[in-house]
Image 1 (cartoon, rainbow, N blue to C red):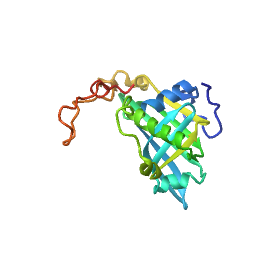
Image 2 (image 1 turned 135 degrees about the vertical axis):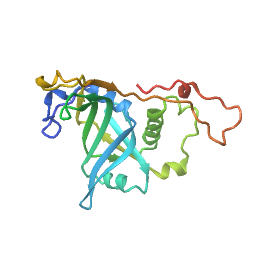
Image 3 (image 1 turned 90 degrees about the horizontal axis):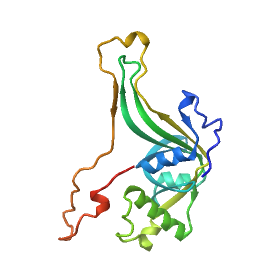
Image 4 (image 1 turned 180 degrees about the horizontal axis):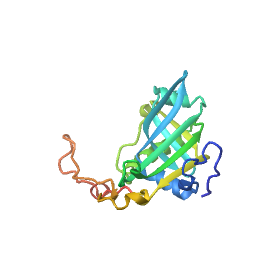
Length: 217
């Protein structure tokens, strides 16, 4: 696991002390997030599309319908920007100006390539499933030949990457600390509730432990 070297495009310029370039921080954020946003330009029009993803080592995988304009455009080698954001808490200050959020984010720049090798493509589809629900792949039906043909998978190398992280409480102006206003952080966490079975679930099918005891981080 090697760290990332900041470039002119990934160097955090606004509040640079929040910039992180170590692989451990970047990978932890990517592995915890559900959704990334993919930014690209097609025919002169900018698009930002939310989608699921998976990661293994220093490669990020994207997937979707073979008819997807996003995947078709990216497979042609156009520049892409992928972002991920996790919100960890609401930072409540004494003044409106200093309200903020605690967050962890990643920005990835580069070009993606089409995954054509059948074994790599199947492995990427396993990653997508396991990224959302660890332990699921071994229980479900795997994609068949028709489903594989109808699915496009792209690989984006993690080379030009940076993270940005905010932690801690509010930072108010000195004269505002005497105001009788509650200030602090309201932490936010992903929590689950009782699983809702499908209406056509086979009678007697138990809820797997990886669902009933699900934890994201």
